Structure formats: structure tokens, C-alpha cells
Image (cartoon, rainbow, N blue to C red):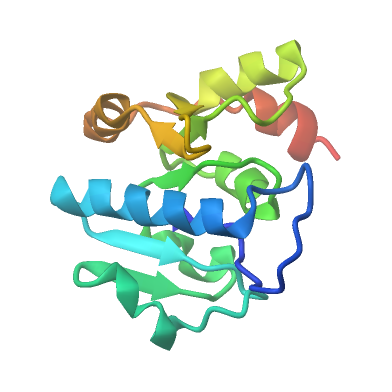
Length: 166
């Protein structure tokens, strides 16, 4: 399940929360295309408060199911979660599941070293970088390798320390 950041199409850029929306949709389209090309069935999880309705997300084409319900209502349909951002309640929810999580690290989110160390224990980290056109480019080989790995028992140190202990 690709977790989208909730496109609003209101021309606002909210610094520190997400990528600008055109960069975001470009990234999401490329992620979906990588997964489709590799033969995966993709669930695109749109933000429930976003203004992209399921009916207009036809540009993903075949083999992509779009859902806008809250994560807890649809998470059972996913075999794994893929995030390119952590500043979302869905990231915390996913960390508390037994499902594999892939986190695309483009270096644009600041992490405290001790927190990132725990995230690395819980998630498969895929590297990414910004190219000369300011597009976040994913290491496709790392992404496909992460998806091909046999699931292991997840590490819950982060969830136990920062989410479930509250």
C-alpha cells in the first residue's frame, strides 16, 4: 500500500510537512509505475481529507486500487506499507502492525539519531536523492529488493517507546 500525503490542489506549500504537490504527485506516479512494472498489485491510499476522489485517480491505470478510507479501515488489504514521509498519523499506525514497512529516505526529513536508529530497525530503508530537476529519485533496485525480502518479525522498540507507552 502506497501511503499518499493528501493532495489538496490549493496551491499552498506547507514547509516541513510534505513535498510541494507537483513534486509529490510526480513521485507517487513514479512509485506506482515501478511497482506495476514489477508485477505488484498496488493499493494507493489517498488521504481521507484530500480532494482527489477515487473516481478521478484514473491516471494510475490498471492494477491500481485507490482507497480513501482511514488507514485502520483498509490496512488489512495490504501486505506491506510504503512511505516517503513520516509526518503522518498513518506512519505511526503502520509502525504498530506486523506488516513490513518500506521507508524511502530522500534526506529531506530531519531525524534525531536515536530515533532514526529505531526506525531503521523497524523499516526497510530505501535511499533516494534529489536530481538536477528537483525530483526525488528512488533507488529502484533497493525498492524492489526490499519488496522481495521475506517478511521477518518486526522490531517494536520505537512503537513500544514512543507510541504504545503513552
